[in-house]
Amino acid sequence: MKIMPNRLDKGFYLYQDEFEQKALKVLRSGWYVLGNEVSSFEEEFAAYTGGKYCVGLASGLDALWIAFRVLGIGSGDEVIVQGNTYIASVMGVTINGATPVFVEPDEFFNIDTSKIEEKITERTKAILVVHLYGQASNMKPIMDIAEKYGLRVVEDCAQSHGACFGGQMTGTFGDIGCFSFYPSKNLGAFGDGGAIVTNDAGIADDVRVFRNYGSEKRYYNKVVGTNSRLDEMQAGLLRVRLSHMAELEKDKRNLCKRYLAELKNDNIVLPTIREGATHIWHQFVIKSERRQELIDYLNEREIGTIIHYPIPPHLSEAYQYLGIERGSLPITERYAETVLSIPLYNGMTDEEQTYVIDAINKFE
Ligand SMILES: *Cc1c(COP(=O)(O)O)cnc(C)c1O
Image (cartoon, rainbow, N blue to C red; front, side, top):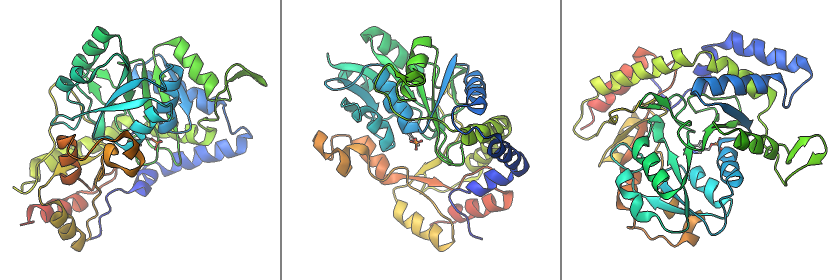
Protein backbone atom coordinates (compact mmCIF):
# COMPACT_ATOMS: atom_id res chain seq x y z
CA MET A 1 0.00 0.00 0.00
CA LYS A 2 1.34 3.45 -0.92
CA ILE A 3 0.65 6.17 1.63
CA MET A 4 1.39 9.80 0.91
CA PRO A 5 2.04 12.26 3.74
CA ASN A 6 -1.01 14.25 2.59
CA ARG A 7 -3.87 13.67 0.15
CA LEU A 8 -5.50 16.90 -0.96
CA ASP A 9 -7.58 15.06 -3.57
CA LYS A 10 -9.41 13.20 -0.80
CA GLY A 11 -10.40 16.51 0.75
CA PHE A 12 -11.96 17.48 -2.58
CA TYR A 13 -13.86 14.23 -3.17
CA LEU A 14 -15.40 14.37 0.32
CA TYR A 15 -17.60 17.25 -0.89
CA GLN A 16 -17.08 17.01 -4.64
CA ASP A 17 -20.61 17.89 -5.63
CA GLU A 18 -20.77 21.01 -3.46
CA PHE A 19 -17.36 22.25 -4.63
CA GLU A 20 -18.28 21.73 -8.28
CA GLN A 21 -21.63 23.48 -7.89
CA LYS A 22 -19.96 26.43 -6.22
CA ALA A 23 -17.21 26.66 -8.84
CA LEU A 24 -19.79 26.70 -11.64
CA LYS A 25 -21.81 29.33 -9.82
CA VAL A 26 -18.79 31.62 -9.53
CA LEU A 27 -17.70 30.99 -13.12
CA ARG A 28 -21.16 31.82 -14.41
CA SER A 29 -21.58 34.89 -12.19
CA GLY A 30 -19.33 37.16 -14.23
CA TRP A 31 -17.91 38.61 -10.98
CA TYR A 32 -14.49 37.28 -9.93
CA VAL A 33 -12.77 39.67 -7.53
CA LEU A 34 -14.13 41.27 -4.32
CA GLY A 35 -17.78 40.32 -4.50
CA ASN A 36 -20.43 38.51 -2.49
CA GLU A 37 -18.48 35.31 -1.99
CA VAL A 38 -15.61 37.21 -0.37
CA SER A 39 -17.79 39.36 1.87
CA SER A 40 -19.90 36.35 2.89
CA PHE A 41 -16.80 34.31 3.62
CA GLU A 42 -15.39 37.17 5.69
CA GLU A 43 -18.55 37.30 7.80
CA GLU A 44 -18.72 33.54 8.19
CA PHE A 45 -15.07 33.13 9.05
CA ALA A 46 -15.15 35.96 11.60
CA ALA A 47 -18.17 34.29 13.21
CA TYR A 48 -16.38 30.92 13.20
CA THR A 49 -13.40 32.37 15.07
CA GLY A 50 -15.46 34.51 17.41
CA GLY A 51 -13.59 37.59 16.17
CA LYS A 52 -15.41 40.72 15.05
CA TYR A 53 -13.88 41.38 11.63
CA CYS A 54 -12.24 39.32 8.92
CA VAL A 55 -10.54 40.66 5.80
CA GLY A 56 -9.70 38.22 3.01
CA LEU A 57 -6.23 38.41 1.49
CA ALA A 58 -4.20 36.60 -1.14
CA SER A 59 -2.04 34.47 1.19
CA GLY A 60 -0.96 33.80 4.75
CA LEU A 61 2.33 35.57 4.17
CA ASP A 62 0.46 38.65 2.99
CA ALA A 63 -1.69 38.50 6.13
CA LEU A 64 1.48 38.56 8.25
CA TRP A 65 3.40 41.36 6.57
CA ILE A 66 0.30 43.49 6.07
CA ALA A 67 -0.52 43.00 9.77
CA PHE A 68 2.86 44.39 10.81
CA ARG A 69 2.61 47.14 8.18
CA VAL A 70 -0.72 48.48 9.44
CA LEU A 71 0.56 48.27 13.03
CA GLY A 72 3.44 50.50 11.94
CA ILE A 73 6.13 47.99 12.88
CA GLY A 74 9.17 48.14 10.63
CA SER A 75 12.75 49.30 10.41
CA GLY A 76 14.46 49.61 13.80
CA ASP A 77 11.77 47.57 15.57
CA GLU A 78 12.11 44.10 17.04
CA VAL A 79 9.52 41.34 17.00
CA ILE A 80 9.75 38.33 19.28
CA VAL A 81 8.97 34.99 17.61
CA GLN A 82 9.75 31.36 18.30
CA GLY A 83 12.81 29.92 16.58
CA ASN A 84 11.17 26.75 15.27
CA THR A 85 8.60 28.16 12.89
CA TYR A 86 7.93 28.05 9.18
CA ILE A 87 10.07 30.70 7.54
CA ALA A 88 7.01 32.64 6.33
CA SER A 89 6.35 33.79 9.92
CA VAL A 90 9.76 35.42 9.95
CA MET A 91 9.40 36.90 6.47
CA GLY A 92 6.20 38.56 7.65
CA VAL A 93 8.42 40.49 10.06
CA THR A 94 11.45 41.15 7.87
CA ILE A 95 9.58 42.23 4.71
CA ASN A 96 8.77 45.38 6.69
CA GLY A 97 12.38 45.85 7.73
CA ALA A 98 11.80 44.79 11.34
CA THR A 99 14.17 42.39 13.12
CA PRO A 100 13.05 38.99 14.40
CA VAL A 101 14.28 38.04 17.89
CA PHE A 102 14.05 34.31 18.35
CA VAL A 103 12.88 32.53 21.49
CA GLU A 104 13.21 28.79 22.12
CA PRO A 105 10.11 26.56 21.96
CA ASP A 106 8.55 24.56 24.77
CA GLU A 107 7.77 20.83 24.78
CA PHE A 108 4.58 21.52 22.79
CA PHE A 109 6.57 23.10 19.92
CA ASN A 110 5.21 26.55 20.76
CA ILE A 111 7.00 29.59 22.19
CA ASP A 112 8.42 28.99 25.67
CA THR A 113 6.72 31.81 27.54
CA SER A 114 9.25 31.67 30.39
CA LYS A 115 11.95 32.83 27.94
CA ILE A 116 10.18 35.82 26.42
CA GLU A 117 10.89 38.54 28.98
CA GLU A 118 14.68 38.14 28.82
CA LYS A 119 14.51 39.01 25.10
CA ILE A 120 12.56 42.24 25.48
CA THR A 121 14.50 45.44 24.74
CA GLU A 122 13.46 49.07 24.25
CA ARG A 123 13.07 48.24 20.54
CA THR A 124 10.64 45.38 21.04
CA LYS A 125 7.27 46.24 19.54
CA ALA A 126 5.42 42.95 19.25
CA ILE A 127 5.22 39.25 19.97
CA LEU A 128 4.41 37.06 16.98
CA VAL A 129 2.76 33.93 18.35
CA VAL A 130 2.80 30.87 16.07
CA HIS A 131 0.33 28.13 16.97
CA LEU A 132 2.56 25.54 15.39
CA TYR A 133 1.28 22.25 13.98
CA GLY A 134 -2.25 23.18 15.09
CA GLN A 135 -1.86 23.43 18.86
CA ALA A 136 -2.81 26.68 20.58
CA SER A 137 0.07 28.44 22.35
CA ASN A 138 0.10 29.31 26.03
CA MET A 139 -1.83 32.56 25.59
CA LYS A 140 -2.34 33.62 29.21
CA PRO A 141 1.31 34.42 30.00
CA ILE A 142 1.82 35.83 26.50
CA MET A 143 -1.02 38.32 26.90
CA ASP A 144 0.17 39.20 30.44
CA ILE A 145 3.68 39.95 29.18
CA ALA A 146 2.34 41.96 26.24
CA GLU A 147 0.25 44.05 28.57
CA LYS A 148 3.08 44.57 31.07
CA TYR A 149 5.49 45.85 28.37
CA GLY A 150 2.93 47.50 26.07
CA LEU A 151 3.60 45.16 23.17
CA ARG A 152 1.40 44.28 20.22
CA VAL A 153 0.45 40.65 19.72
CA VAL A 154 0.11 39.17 16.24
CA GLU A 155 -0.94 35.53 15.92
CA ASP A 156 0.22 33.31 13.08
CA CYS A 157 -2.78 30.98 12.77
CA ALA A 158 -1.79 29.50 9.42
CA GLN A 159 -1.84 26.07 11.08
CA SER A 160 -4.41 26.59 13.83
CA HIS A 161 -7.88 27.28 12.37
CA GLY A 162 -10.23 26.27 15.16
CA ALA A 163 -7.64 25.62 17.89
CA CYS A 164 -8.52 27.15 21.25
CA PHE A 165 -6.80 28.20 24.45
CA GLY A 166 -9.09 28.34 27.48
CA GLY A 167 -12.06 27.96 25.15
CA GLN A 168 -11.12 31.03 23.07
CA MET A 169 -10.12 30.58 19.48
CA THR A 170 -6.62 31.36 18.28
CA GLY A 171 -6.49 34.51 16.21
CA THR A 172 -8.73 36.46 18.59
CA PHE A 173 -6.34 37.06 21.50
CA GLY A 174 -3.96 39.56 19.99
CA ASP A 175 -4.34 42.66 17.84
CA ILE A 176 -4.44 40.65 14.63
CA GLY A 177 -4.80 36.95 13.79
CA CYS A 178 -3.24 35.91 10.48
CA PHE A 179 -4.61 32.93 8.58
CA SER A 180 -3.51 31.01 5.51
CA PHE A 181 -5.82 28.97 3.31
CA TYR A 182 -3.05 27.32 1.34
CA PRO A 183 -4.47 23.96 0.14
CA SER A 184 -2.71 21.82 2.77
CA LYS A 185 -3.92 23.87 5.76
CA ASN A 186 -6.83 22.65 7.87
CA LEU A 187 -9.11 25.13 6.13
CA GLY A 188 -7.64 24.91 2.67
CA ALA A 189 -8.59 26.57 -0.61
CA PHE A 190 -7.82 25.29 -4.11
CA GLY A 191 -5.07 27.81 -4.63
CA ASP A 192 -3.62 30.56 -2.45
CA GLY A 193 -5.62 32.51 0.08
CA GLY A 194 -5.33 34.20 3.45
CA ALA A 195 -7.10 36.51 5.87
CA ILE A 196 -6.71 38.58 8.98
CA VAL A 197 -9.11 38.52 11.91
CA THR A 198 -9.30 41.39 14.38
CA ASN A 199 -11.62 42.92 16.95
CA ASP A 200 -10.40 46.42 16.04
CA ALA A 201 -12.55 48.18 13.43
CA GLY A 202 -9.74 50.60 12.57
CA ILE A 203 -7.28 47.79 11.86
CA ALA A 204 -9.86 45.96 9.74
CA ASP A 205 -10.46 49.13 7.71
CA ASP A 206 -6.74 49.75 7.25
CA VAL A 207 -6.19 46.20 5.97
CA ARG A 208 -9.23 46.39 3.69
CA VAL A 209 -7.88 49.57 2.12
CA PHE A 210 -4.29 48.32 1.99
CA ARG A 211 -5.15 45.07 0.15
CA ASN A 212 -6.71 47.00 -2.73
CA TYR A 213 -3.98 49.47 -3.75
CA GLY A 214 -4.73 51.62 -0.73
CA SER A 215 -8.08 52.47 -2.18
CA GLU A 216 -11.47 52.60 -0.51
CA LYS A 217 -13.18 54.32 -3.37
CA ARG A 218 -12.24 53.40 -6.91
CA TYR A 219 -9.30 55.43 -8.24
CA TYR A 220 -9.00 57.35 -4.98
CA ASN A 221 -5.90 56.09 -3.19
CA LYS A 222 -5.34 56.92 0.46
CA VAL A 223 -2.08 55.05 1.04
CA VAL A 224 0.48 53.12 -0.99
CA GLY A 225 -1.03 49.68 -0.64
CA THR A 226 -0.70 46.43 -2.49
CA ASN A 227 -2.78 43.96 -4.44
CA SER A 228 -3.64 41.15 -2.04
CA ARG A 229 -7.22 40.07 -2.60
CA LEU A 230 -8.87 36.77 -1.91
CA ASP A 231 -10.69 35.97 -5.16
CA GLU A 232 -14.33 34.98 -5.51
CA MET A 233 -13.55 31.41 -6.58
CA GLN A 234 -11.37 30.68 -3.54
CA ALA A 235 -13.77 32.46 -1.19
CA GLY A 236 -16.71 30.46 -2.54
CA LEU A 237 -14.87 27.15 -2.25
CA LEU A 238 -13.67 28.09 1.24
CA ARG A 239 -17.28 28.71 2.28
CA VAL A 240 -18.12 25.15 1.27
CA ARG A 241 -15.23 23.74 3.28
CA LEU A 242 -15.91 26.02 6.26
CA SER A 243 -19.50 24.71 6.42
CA HIS A 244 -18.01 21.25 7.07
CA MET A 245 -15.28 22.25 9.51
CA ALA A 246 -16.87 20.48 12.47
CA GLU A 247 -16.84 17.12 10.65
CA LEU A 248 -13.36 17.69 9.24
CA GLU A 249 -11.98 18.56 12.69
CA LYS A 250 -13.63 15.54 14.25
CA ASP A 251 -12.22 13.25 11.57
CA LYS A 252 -8.66 14.48 12.21
CA ARG A 253 -9.13 14.35 15.97
CA ASN A 254 -10.20 10.72 15.73
CA LEU A 255 -7.28 9.83 13.49
CA CYS A 256 -4.85 11.41 15.95
CA LYS A 257 -6.51 9.81 18.95
CA ARG A 258 -5.83 6.50 17.30
CA TYR A 259 -2.20 7.40 16.57
CA LEU A 260 -1.75 8.44 20.20
CA ALA A 261 -3.33 5.26 21.52
CA GLU A 262 -1.75 2.73 19.18
CA LEU A 263 1.70 4.01 18.21
CA LYS A 264 4.13 2.21 20.48
CA ASN A 265 7.84 2.32 19.77
CA ASP A 266 10.69 3.40 22.04
CA ASN A 267 12.40 5.05 19.08
CA ILE A 268 9.76 7.74 18.81
CA VAL A 269 8.28 10.42 21.06
CA LEU A 270 4.61 11.23 20.55
CA PRO A 271 3.19 14.78 20.62
CA THR A 272 1.48 16.00 23.79
CA ILE A 273 -1.17 18.64 24.42
CA ARG A 274 -0.98 21.45 26.95
CA GLU A 275 -3.69 21.60 29.56
CA GLY A 276 -6.19 24.26 28.55
CA ALA A 277 -5.17 24.11 24.90
CA THR A 278 -6.72 22.27 21.99
CA HIS A 279 -4.93 20.82 18.98
CA ILE A 280 -6.49 20.73 15.53
CA TRP A 281 -3.73 18.52 14.15
CA HIS A 282 -2.48 20.38 11.15
CA GLN A 283 0.39 17.91 11.45
CA PHE A 284 1.01 14.88 13.63
CA VAL A 285 4.62 15.48 14.58
CA ILE A 286 6.70 12.84 16.32
CA LYS A 287 10.34 13.08 17.36
CA SER A 288 13.01 10.46 16.81
CA GLU A 289 16.71 10.39 17.54
CA ARG A 290 16.96 7.90 14.65
CA ARG A 291 14.93 10.00 12.24
CA GLN A 292 16.80 9.31 9.02
CA GLU A 293 16.69 5.55 9.59
CA LEU A 294 12.98 5.77 10.30
CA ILE A 295 12.35 7.83 7.14
CA ASP A 296 14.28 5.31 5.02
CA TYR A 297 12.50 2.38 6.64
CA LEU A 298 9.08 3.94 6.01
CA ASN A 299 10.06 4.86 2.45
CA GLU A 300 10.86 1.22 1.75
CA ARG A 301 7.29 0.48 2.77
CA GLU A 302 5.97 3.28 0.54
CA ILE A 303 4.98 5.48 3.47
CA GLY A 304 5.82 9.12 2.88
CA THR A 305 6.77 11.54 5.64
CA ILE A 306 7.76 15.22 5.76
CA ILE A 307 10.07 17.18 8.05
CA HIS A 308 8.48 20.40 9.32
CA TYR A 309 11.06 21.98 9.19
CA PRO A 310 14.58 20.75 8.48
CA ILE A 311 16.29 24.16 8.66
CA PRO A 312 15.23 26.67 11.32
CA PRO A 313 14.90 30.21 9.93
CA HIS A 314 17.98 31.55 11.75
CA LEU A 315 20.15 28.95 9.99
CA SER A 316 18.62 29.37 6.55
CA GLU A 317 20.67 31.06 3.86
CA ALA A 318 18.06 33.82 3.63
CA TYR A 319 18.72 34.92 7.22
CA GLN A 320 22.49 34.67 7.37
CA TYR A 321 22.48 38.48 7.49
CA LEU A 322 21.06 38.30 11.01
CA GLY A 323 24.35 36.72 12.09
CA ILE A 324 22.79 34.19 14.46
CA GLU A 325 25.16 31.27 14.80
CA ARG A 326 24.42 27.56 14.95
CA GLY A 327 24.25 26.56 18.60
CA SER A 328 22.55 29.75 19.74
CA LEU A 329 19.08 28.12 19.77
CA PRO A 330 19.85 24.55 20.84
CA ILE A 331 16.26 23.38 21.42
CA THR A 332 15.08 24.80 18.11
CA GLU A 333 18.02 23.19 16.34
CA ARG A 334 17.46 19.85 18.08
CA TYR A 335 13.81 19.87 16.97
CA ALA A 336 14.89 20.52 13.39
CA GLU A 337 17.04 17.39 13.63
CA THR A 338 14.44 15.10 15.20
CA VAL A 339 10.88 16.09 14.19
CA LEU A 340 8.93 14.09 11.63
CA SER A 341 5.36 14.48 10.37
CA ILE A 342 3.67 11.18 9.62
CA PRO A 343 0.76 10.73 7.15
CA LEU A 344 -2.41 12.56 8.17
CA TYR A 345 -5.27 13.88 6.08
CA ASN A 346 -9.03 14.10 6.00
CA GLY A 347 -10.39 10.98 4.41
CA MET A 348 -7.55 8.73 5.61
CA THR A 349 -9.01 5.22 5.86
CA ASP A 350 -8.72 2.81 8.80
CA GLU A 351 -6.82 0.48 6.55
CA GLU A 352 -4.31 3.15 5.57
CA GLN A 353 -3.80 4.16 9.17
CA THR A 354 -3.41 0.58 10.33
CA TYR A 355 -0.70 0.12 7.72
CA VAL A 356 1.20 3.19 9.00
CA ILE A 357 0.80 2.22 12.68
CA ASP A 358 1.96 -1.36 12.09
CA ALA A 359 4.96 -0.22 10.12
CA ILE A 360 6.08 2.31 12.74
CA ASN A 361 5.51 -0.11 15.62
CA LYS A 362 7.69 -2.71 13.91
CA PHE A 363 10.62 -0.30 13.32
CA GLU A 364 13.59 -1.62 15.28
C1 LIG B 1 1.64 28.23 5.59
C2 LIG B 1 2.19 29.10 6.62
C3 LIG B 1 2.38 30.48 6.40
C4 LIG B 1 2.24 31.12 5.06
O1 LIG B 1 1.01 30.97 4.44
P1 LIG B 1 0.92 31.09 2.85
O2 LIG B 1 -0.53 31.14 2.59
O3 LIG B 1 1.57 29.88 2.28
O4 LIG B 1 1.61 32.34 2.44
C5 LIG B 1 2.81 31.26 7.46
N1 LIG B 1 3.07 30.73 8.67
C6 LIG B 1 2.92 29.42 8.91
C7 LIG B 1 3.19 28.91 10.29
C8 LIG B 1 2.49 28.56 7.90
O5 LIG B 1 2.36 27.25 8.16
